[in-house]
Length: 227
Image: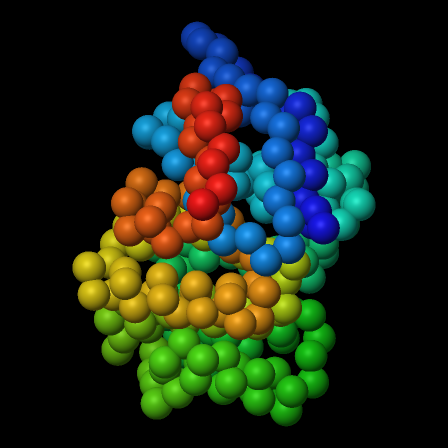
């Protein structure tokens, strides 16, 4: 079953000197439970594509249907609310709040969603245990390694029970050991809980783990291969 349907998606950046087509008439579908990587050289449109898919950037043309809802037919406030309840994000730079503990960072999205305190604390503890940080729930980001911070970010992305998770270069700042650890955790969550992951990446290790590899070049889909 498709949870995402992308129809004739276009994104053009128009500056005073030059017009750049970052995403050029892309048509793709994603099914529930996919573990997919979007790859391509710098400037191929990977990050722009993920930003459009996540409701962080508005397309010039085309449609993104998520469970039958046309994302960009919604008003700005509705898009923000839809993103909060349906899409999880893992960024290259972790984006954790430095004044909050690991548990509080994971709880943050659930707090915005209005979860009762006891329920969000319980889920945060469970998720941190699932990513191997059950003993670091009270640590702030500056007391965690890069790999540990990114695992907190994965737990935070899962917290709101999103329809899918977008991971933009999630391993770019990690060493080999941390990368393998993080990928094993995400693949396990994908396999055992059916969580959908869509990566944007340059990392061959991510590509190796992915079950589907979509290659972009000049904003177009060059190939789409399932393993």
